Image 1: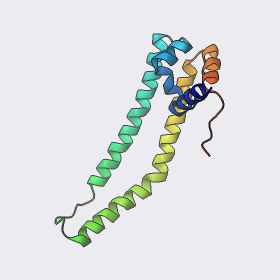
Image 2: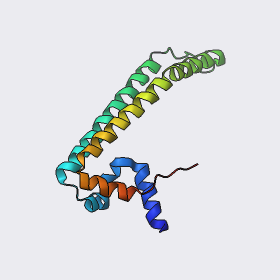
Image 3: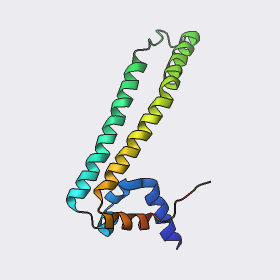
Length: 131
């Protein structure tokens, strides 16, 4: 029972991407085409996140770095500018990443047949609440 519950919690943590774990995909009876489609969906959301990270990196690099790393005032001003930029974008970036993730999860779940979705939900078990 404990190992079963542990597996359920691990699968919940991994989300639909856990269907790509060999024993899970075998248990669900996923076809090669289904696995490829799920991989493609996961890769697409990964590319969006990487593009966002690259964009933020470019913005950070556009902030003039201090000429003298021993000039505490200049270093502090640079650090403050970077932190301000990160704080300014944090909420929107987190919202975007969560939205992309939810959308990808829905798209990947839609790849499963109705029978596979029932089996997947059974594999997940009751929702784990860490609180």
